[in-house]
Amino acid sequence: MILYPAIDLKDGSAVRLLRGDMEQATVFNDDPAAQAAEFVAAGCEWLHLVDLNGAFAGTPVNAAPVEAILAHCNVPAQLGGGIRDMATIEMWLTKGLARVILGTVAVENPDLVREAARAFPGQVAVGIDARDGHVATKGWAEETEVMVTDLARSFEDAGVAAIIYTDINRDGAMQGPNIEATAALARAVDIPVIASGGVSSLADLIALRDCSAPLNGAISGRALYDGALDLREALKALKGTA
Image (tube, rainbow, N blue to C red; front, side):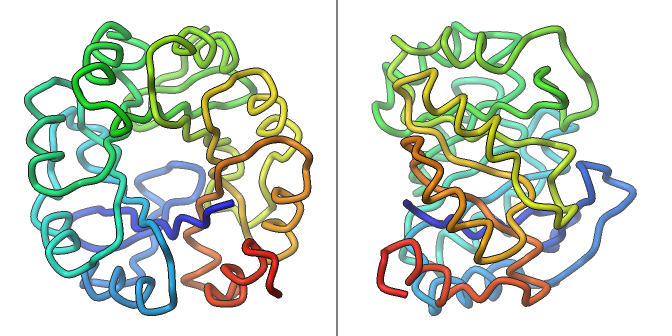
């Protein structure tokens, strides 16, 4: 299971939100590239990046810090937020991004997801963000009637590389992940599932690792910044060497 350290970008800085609220942002580093380098030095194998402003704007906003991270770090990175057309997908992959995450368009324009997955095999993931089982879009600002499992299953034959499942109510709250819902989703689809939202301790990671569902990995942000989770220790635990 892979641990994906999260770098959420707002106004050029690395921040964490509480339950997706842009008005409740804590700035952890004014230099996102330096933050990424710290994670890489600790041994991470992937980086998870989110353009928070872009998620609301519908177009990339924090391109400069993302490009700086790509230039300074030699591990693959995935990015979500503001990626809603083929031109933007191609632009990011050309700049060296390993994987784009399509969230809002997965609901509003699923054909784009399929087209992108065909054009860029292994480089397109679907981000499914939910409150109480219902998918939310546009930076979590709009809730839909679409159910998580239904949306995930609709992409079974699309060739997407992964599903990043975020429980919004747990995100940034340091209350632990929604293991039951995440495991249920992983069992319901053949697409690799990455857990996001609420990972606040080593115990949370181990619980995800041992939940008997085929999870690809887990994303953690605030716990790494607050020191509640030691990245090196966590990486060892997920490799079974701790």
